[in-house]
Every structure is written in C-alpha cells, then in structure tokens.
Image (cartoon, rainbow, N blue to C red; front, side, top):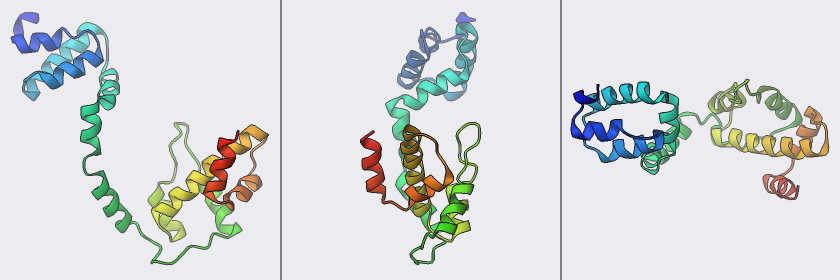
Amino acid sequence: MNNAFSKEEKKLFNSKDPKDYINRSLKLNIPQGRKAFVTKHWLDKTGYDVADLEYFRNRHPYWKSKKMEGTTERNIIRSYEHNYGNGQRKNWDDKLLQEFINLNKKDKNSNYIHKDWELAKRFKCTIASIQHLRRKFNMSEKILKTKGRVTNKKILDHLKLSENLLRKMKNSL
C-alpha cells in the first residue's frame, strides 16, 4: 500500500503516533480526500483509532484557536436568544432554589440533564444566572463533601451565600 502514496503522503503515513500525525498533517500540503485515504491506512497500520486522533487534535494549539474563533459572537447571540428574564432581577426564594436543585442533575457521563437555556426558560431568567447558580451549586457540593454528607437542605443553605464567600470557603479546604 505504501507505493500508492506520494512523497508527502508517505511522510504523513510514517508518523509514529497521533500527536506526530496531527503535527505533520498541518504542515504537509495534501488534499483533504487524500488525507482521509492516508488516515484510514495509517489507523489500520498503527492500531490507533479515530478517538486517539481527536484527542490530540483537540489539544493542538492550532485547532484550539480554530475552535475558539467566533465564540464571543456566538455567546452574545445565544444570550439574546435565550434571555427569558425580561430585564427583571430574579428573586431566588427557597422554593425556586429547591426546584433548581431538583432539576440540576447530571447523567452517568456527568453531563447536565437540562441545558442552561432550558432552565433559564423554566425559571424566566438569563443563562448567566443559571450558570451562576450552577457554579455556586458545584462549589457547595465540594465544600460539603469534605465536611461529610451532602443534603439538599445544606446545598440550599449554601446557595443563599455569595459566590465569593463560597469560593473562599472552597479554597480554604
């Protein structure tokens, strides 16, 4: 199979590991279709899989910067699209906080079951306020885990504290 490759493609095909493969694929001038062809054969030869390549690609500075392009604009658009607060300050009483605690669950892969915008819509607030509560919730959980049992009542009490105070408590552990 090695004979079917051009000189540039052979350099890519002879990469020793996924990190080297990602570096060479950026430096070499190989058309996308041919790169996919070489990649398939390189994966077969080395025993690595696509997940290995994705892992190193996501950590490469070039691809990190590419992924970050336009994030500010996307976040601004997202915040306008999902602003359910109508400019009103949200008063988080015990009942709402308890409902938030009940809905702020994660699945087996540690992903939130309810997206930020879903909770913002449910509680008629902004995504930023949901993210603020989630940060406070996570800090509270870490603080309480070091002190013993985590209960909804204790989390509720901690959610009433400021984020700065919770951060100081967490950092002092």
